[in-house]
Amino acid sequence: MTEKALEKILQEGRERGLYENAFLQVFGAEEVVYAGRAGRATAASLFDVASITKVFTALLVGALVLERRLDDQFRVGDFFPGRVSGPLSLVTVEELLSHTSGLPSWVPLYEEVMNGEGRFTVSPAEKRRETILERLLTLSLESPPGEEIRYSDAGYILLGFLLERGTGKSLKELLRKKITEPLRLMDTGFTPLDEVPHCD
Image (tube, rainbow, N blue to C red):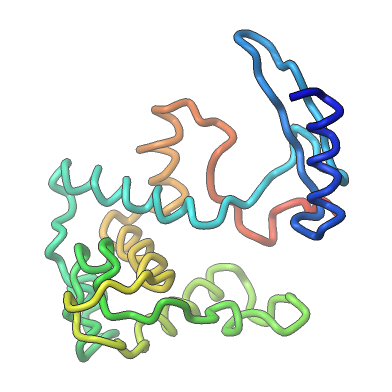
């Protein structure tokens, strides 16, 4: 594919509204053979890769199970005694991990801490996290645990909170220590939304 063809693809994607900004690098055996952009993105821009968080969370669960610091049969109620009750308290780490917890597929958690204009209504960041956790711990299950497979964003967000509670470390720190540093992925990690420089 020629440089002109790559440039056309980048620009057409932006014109069609697929993205506001994009940056593409093509590598040969030992060097960059093409670098192009649409909008204001550069090689230094931060990109949100969204659901990759689920992959990292699953890897962290596996690592902690192998280290015997976590058991996949631990229940939500084991991590939050007195804060969660009913069927949700009986959901296991394994059920969260395998999308069989019975939790809804999607819950608009952002509405708990943001207004319709995308501005935070709860501050500081730690209070936002606590507000979201409280909402998660009050969710009703849509099916009994272990009975149905239902892809659940809420389940993985809750799983992240369980990992933090169980280890005493932030998900950001766990990711860095267990995955990104050992793999030398120095530009990969979690950045709080209010710390991200926007590319407009």
